[in-house]
Length: 126
Image 1: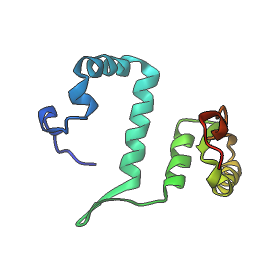
Image 2 (image 1 turned 120 degrees about the vertical axis):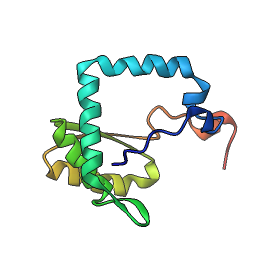
Image 3 (image 1 turned 90 degrees about the vertical axis):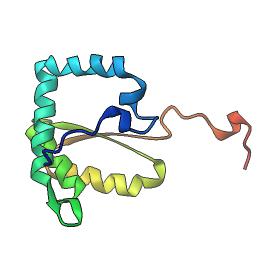
């Protein structure tokens, strides 16, 4: 991807976690010393380099996100993948689950109603 340096933190918006929590960001950085975290980050960077291209209009993806996700899962040797979705998107989630299963993945899913509180509990009736 780009070899441009990161912009200075003081130029980031006030809500940026790197600005708001500098000590925490230093702690997070130490996580990359763990071999499994370092390898995950390496594979994610490889995936990014393979799936994006720089054009005159800017950076764009070369393949659909779902295919990118499948390729990344395969690079990581994942056999099981989870999907979380809004109940209003259950048809779409079902299609995604079918595609992932066809690629040899075991799919585990959860929707937004799991553990949800009925609206009547918070005073809504209609």
